[in-house]
Length: 215
Figure 1 (cartoon, helix red, strand yellow):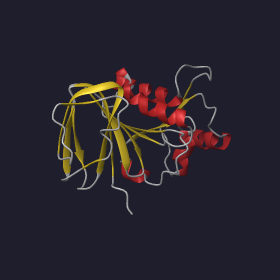
Figure 2: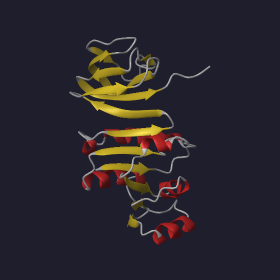
Figure 3: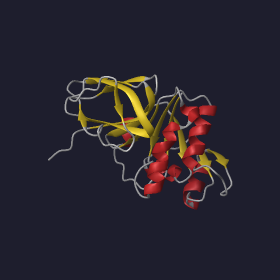
């Protein structure tokens, strides 16, 4: 099962269509359910404390038969974290997160860091916005990146140094290198073919893939 979680970040994402497939299980993380309605999508489920879901949107969702999983406002997790954990518990084997970026910097950072949740290990989880996507590669894992020559691929360590990083298909190759936490060394590498490979020996590496900026 592939789950698409729509969060309530303050993004003006106009490219959601490329990330949603027929048959996806759509989850609205609180106010993200209203965003889904605005896109013409009806969530199968809404989860959160419902403090950012407008009454009109809730009424429309109820009329469509949408399920609600409500949590108290006084909680330790954000609505997006609740949605991710619920998707895993229900058997999701792939997760796409939309609407998680933009607006408050603390929310944006926290949403990206959720990729490191232990419960998500072994499950492909990506955050996407417009034509950019980001995902986490853990120690001992490798990943293939599909794109076109000139696409940008940034490699950003999370939570500490990342060791044993090797790449292929990128302009500036790494061969068992260490990317140090807090360094910008891995930012804005470039694809030299339609496919690139990244392998990580130890640590947590955030991979961000998107097109080269146009002048």
